Image 1: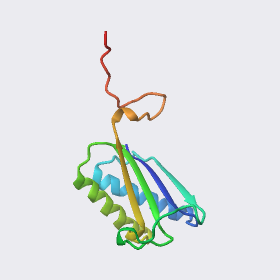
Image 2: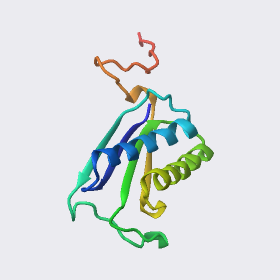
Image 3: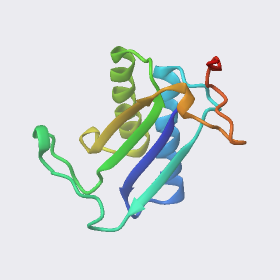
Length: 133
């Protein structure tokens, strides 16, 4: 049930954005057991000067092709799976979209199942709480 936000500089075509999106989703399916149909993403493109970042932080040399990927998901995946996810996203973006791995920043945000409503104003995954009397 991940929700993905992708932020990048303006200028990519609809086809290029689709490739980025699908590559990220493929990596999640392959590495953190996300079902194929669990696909919820928002892509936001930014004008020059709207993405701010240090181009040399941690000795990683970034270009104007920098992409920020924020993934909000249910807690519980192992560090091993998270590392596999980071590597696979970078690998697929380089292979399918020509994005340098140095230009891919990924931020995972974990929360609990009851923090999700997939529609109808219902927390579909929340465990029922016993009423206190």
